[in-house]
Amino acid sequence: MKLALVTETFPPEINGVAMTFGVIARELGRRGHAVTVYRPRRHDLPAGGLHPEFSEIALPGMPIPGYPLLRLGLPAGGELRRRWRTDRPDLVHVATEGPLGASAVSAARELGLPVTSSFHTNFHAYTKHYGFGPLGRAVLAWLRHVHNRTQCTFAPTVALCDELTALGFRNLNVLSRGVDTWQFHPARCSADLRLKWDAAPNDPVVIHVGRMAAEKNYPLLFRTFAAMRTANPRCRFVLVGDGPLRARLQREHPHCIFTGFIPRDELARHYASADIYVHASLTETFGNVLTEALASGLAVAGFDYAAASEFVQTELNGLAVPCDQPGALTSAAVRLATDPILRAQLRAAARATVEPQSWEHVIARFEDDLAAIAGAHPIPAEPAIA
Image (cartoon, rainbow, N blue to C red; front, side):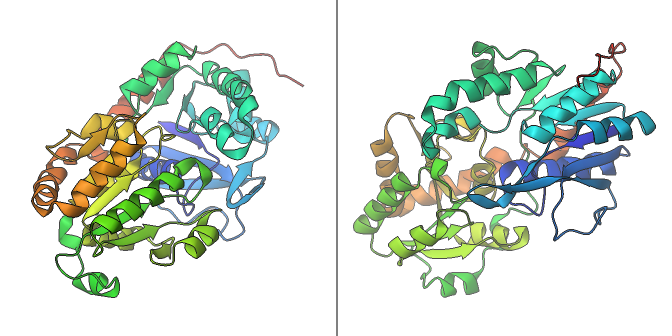
């Protein structure tokens, strides 16, 4: 197939959506599909990209206000229509619902192209973390409008598909998240890295990976860290990532190790060199970091939500607690910090949980779904909107 992938975030940006669609573009290209990625322009990237598996076309964009590490795509319907009339794709897949993604949906419909979308981010839930709580309903209405104009919306879990259906979204299907079980592996544990963290062999190292932003529930995470440290002063805390909150968090928590963004191979080494992963976020649609932690053989504690609800069996391969009980998450993390026998049991079982969740399996299903939609009856073109 000739596939157009439209996304407002893509590598080298570091977040779950960028990582997911970087892998999808690469693996679909390796399977013989002609994949073109349409993304906002970044001045630190060469024109056309450097990837043998897919091509990139840069379109106008701007830094997100208050979050310059990420860019917002600007509407590009005219440019997309011009390109797609000349080089017509078999299907357009829109990964994000911003101005670029929405204009791509309109352009595809006007040209009679099959168009699908992905729901990856609970933007309507983010509004309360940024002082825009009253806008939550309007944001939800916008998301529903964008997605319901596509022939299929893919979400990462069955539970999220059910939730979106109840909110009025239509034509939902599952596009799960894979995990690179070769890259994320307990064998990547580094004694040198633990030495750098001042962690003796039996000292529990707690790691957290993610975007340092308001929606990630850092107040609860650091309350939990404090309780773990009180219960076991030998605990070490490593935080990987960057974002608007990093400078303040680093000032407030000097006993923690902040690495900033690191390459994925180095990330795999950090996971495998730790012992415990604590996940406090309640705004994820999936949470790739949790499956990466399981693949790396860590004892995990998190809310029974998103990826944890799919993969964690409490007391068997991790600890999952009810979403409305933040104290229970702290208690679970303290257990991991103070019970080396439980910690070892959960670590031993963690990796086997996600070994079947390879990207190869996930993308094979997605490929079949796209092929079925692209091969369906022709889509009538819509009148162009001025």
